[in-house]
Image (cartoon, rainbow, N blue to C red; front, side, top):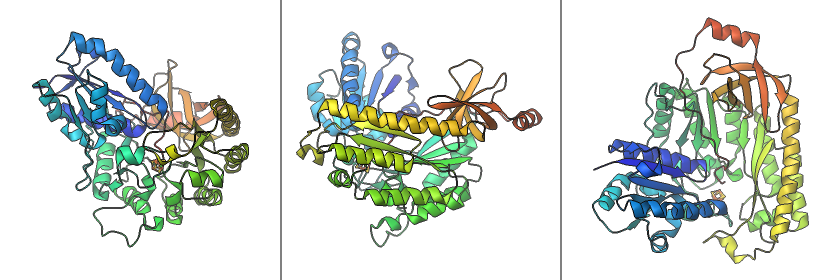
Length: 479
Ligand code: SF4
């Protein structure tokens, strides 16, 4: 028994990646995608509890589906992801029209659990971490498929051992478990074979990677991380890969060996997103980040020095418990000192089960808002100055797909800037095009193809390229 499914995703790229695996698992059991909720036999809301708004959105979406469930009692309504893991049975008690609650580690069990529901089983919560035998569902890209993305995401690990005091991830995703390097490399090779040009490695602390197929390292020292070796293995064994990115690294694991990998491997993009969270040592300590501001700056400088032109972006939380004006000024100072070209800023909000709940949420909401606005003001000025500096330069852009403006396409430079360009009748999706930057917008650039690029395209028509653009999310993975 199967039917039509609809998966609705909230939150970060890890969740989007989990949703893709859910869809693959369902399709493997004969399910087909529904276009609308009304024609679905199964609706999965894949949730996120990292930010407050995602939880609010879930409550609102579940509420909206209640009339549909009344009209169609056979509809199976499931909640997956971090809120599912966090709330488990409690969610079933609170939302009476919910049938299934399924944790991130239990995606492979989804088709069987849905069948049970269709056969009349009582509502069920299945949220078990696969600690003893971690399962990583491999993506199954199809060669030449129109759904093959230009830029694919590949999981390297799951869970997190860091336990930052504000973060719920260690509770909703469990402890760190790693995927064997051979599996990761093989999956990347399959994406490239299918037509993807770029891969982003995904992990909650992606740079703490250890290969579980090798003997365990002598200690848990960050220098023992096998992430640089993984990057080298990918570069060596998948020579057809155009660009390699990773998200999100933790500054503690940004070792000298990682900087050396950036110096050696051309395939690594010249951009690193390195969450800082605060520029005040006092607040970093309360956040249990386990680095000081000086250490953070040393590590990102070492990365930037390894390869000319590396740009840096970051995540910042404002209004963490106890954050004074001086602490916040230290954060602004860090943003200026490092010269981030972009950042994601968030107001602190208490999350269930986190150690920071023991701290008084003592920064008034109005102060948090004011600090966030000031942070964005500084960051946007830096973004704008950076984009302005690029006007008149030549860049190589990986075209991801059609832009919102007819006749235009958009893509990313090696440094991660968004570039729009006129493509005319040319199908450039998936091509790496040399462009001259002619204009800077607030968050992106406008460019023209160089004459050399036009000649090259005219002389060598490209093989058919993948069509699906990269799905980029507003939120990064935490780290
Ligand atoms: S912020 Fe990142 S490193 Fe810290 S606990 Fe959350 S996922 Fe782990």
